[in-house]
Length: 329
Image (cartoon, rainbow, N blue to C red; front, side, top):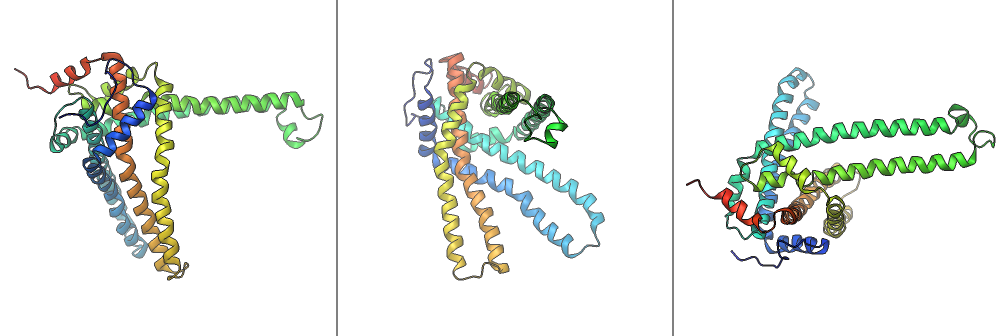
């Protein structure tokens, strides 16, 4: 299989513009299989919410069966986990296809989906671990930020300042300005650290989707290792992608708004039919936006992962993965 686009020499690092351009060209060149996988993934993600809707209606109408919730809630959570695992497997298949295109490796869509599908529970574990890491990190950062804000508040005069904040004697104006600047710095540092950690785990699913002998925890470690010394470069790539992808989502939203305004001309806006249609339309718009944007992000992550590995492993990236896929002799 010959790639339909050019990349830089794998030994040479790709520029930010080249990474973004390659990701978009991957998407536009292979949009059919990518959108097919994105649709399957989105359908899996939709199933739990389709199931919970009739359940909610049932308990709203028949209010004498709330004891059944003790059985239905665990069953629904189990369904949610199963569907989310399938979603993650199909989403990872998009990234694997994109990476195969970059490394010129032949693999059918069925083979790709079978590989990532066999690891769906590992993807679920990976996302659970990353969610746990981010929860702990967020709590720690929040506590540190709260302590800093309390210290700033105390330096500004505490309760007397709140009782009479406009009085000249309440607090030193210079201290107020300095405290506000420190507060803004604390908030900025909080979001910078969140972005920094986000980038360090941004390609954590790619090693698990591409490499053979690897576990969920190994994949997280690989992302941490590969993004080292490239954090803000990767952050810039994803920021540029977000800016460029915004018009795609805007088109979907504008189309939905146009349909809503057209319906309002024939159906009263306060009618049940109009409200129900708008709810269904908003859900469909969200699903359509997810289907369109998921392949873009997975393609971009695949290019970022390819570039990060190229910087560390050079041309061996192809030989290593090819060796991983060959059967043992």
